[in-house]
Image (cartoon, rainbow over all chains, first blue to last red; front, side, top):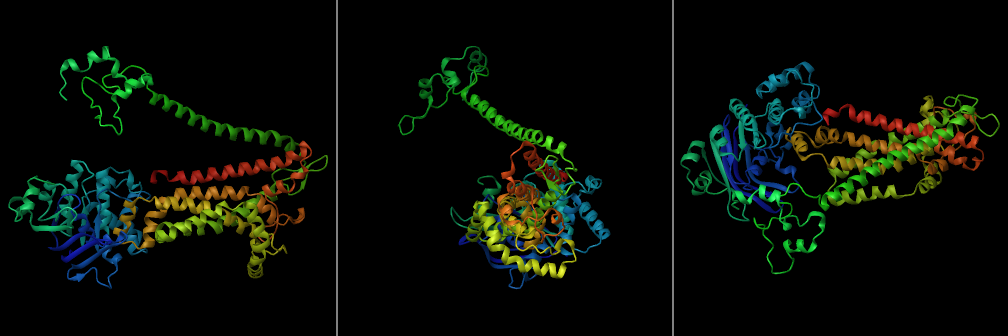
Length: 259
Length: 371
């Protein structure tokens, strides 16, 4: 079920402003790819183009091709709603629906897709998703309680459960641990390791140790210069990026010389 | 700044140099100027050094500065304003009860359930049931019409319309609130009533077997007409509050819904409406409060009916609300007993409004842990 992602000549705009230029990459199915780079270099912007969340912002557009197993998700006959059901997303700050219970949060996406789902079927998927998100044991006795009442780390795992409940093919994570403490971060990282058996995962992170820990491949983004668009400097095996990168800019960033 | 041990703490606490509390009590303006940067001058701003401690540095005790005095004044003023409001409501209640009680005790019939209104003679005989019914019915008609429209407009302005459309629409809606209610009354009875009479006729012809739509041969000045006018009058307040709460929906919640593959309507249903619900209830209650108490427009619109015909379940009948009853008979306030009867009616309206607001609070608080 996991799918491959290819970006070809991707140019991303906010109105007339070219935010990220000329991005090419291939992401293999069932792998974890980390996007790293200094703030404002466009890595989150690229991530958000992968599930067409980018265009939720007024005036934002994309040129070039973004292929999901060869199918252009920006094709004329593609409904962005379907794209987002296929490609799930987890955000920087945990954002469970505050008015919903834990159960309803996990079931929210399913109810969108098939409003007439039987309660017993729903129960099964909710439990499965919460187990996959390593949250079941902590919340199984209080599924009817509000999701917003959980700790930050639990909320983030709840959001992951919500995202995987609809069985997406790709999971995008936009700095999923930046608002969490180290123990919760560890829990999420372990979770990423188990989720990659099933999903293609792309994770944006500011934490280079995290990128080194969880990903197989790493993409380094950087600004081409002050006032110039962001660009993909290089993408390679994580081990190579962190030990022997091809580009000087990557080495400078990794070694902490800037950024 | 490298502080030597002798520079810190003890020495200064014991014997603060004069300059260490320039702002204290505001008594030495000249001294304060010595530290403040002078705008436009070439003199560099005083850099705090160990020799010249600024505001309070190193001193924990001492006098309370002017900033904290202002704090206390503000706290006092705002608590005073709050207390004043509570006192005012209390006094109104006391006034209503004191003036109403003698009339209620002198009443021959049951004050709450009687349908007559005869307060002129020596033995007053009156009850508020028809007034209560008409007041509630006309306000319900207004709410049923206004709330869905207000939610629709608020969603349009906050979620769908581009800014250059949303702004003028919001402005026009706000303008509706600025129209005096006497204008609404005149417009309602002279312009609107004949226009919507065919709707009323059609409904009572086809659904007249439902008591709510039964024809009582009242033309124009019906509860229905009054309800429509009230709906227009309360539309702006509900819309404004709805728009406000919808616009405050956290971006994170909206994006969460988008990312799950929600359509625009589903985003609204998942993120915007649940978040706005308590605010929307408050807005609706403000509107209802206005509808229950609206006087002059309703007095102009509603046809009075004889006591016998006053009580029906139909929205196509006339009648009187608490407020219009009192307004219609303001000329009769010539004895305390007579006036007391109307004040008693006002007391019921007061209690009704309170009960409605309490019910709304309860609805909002019931799911507080989910807010």
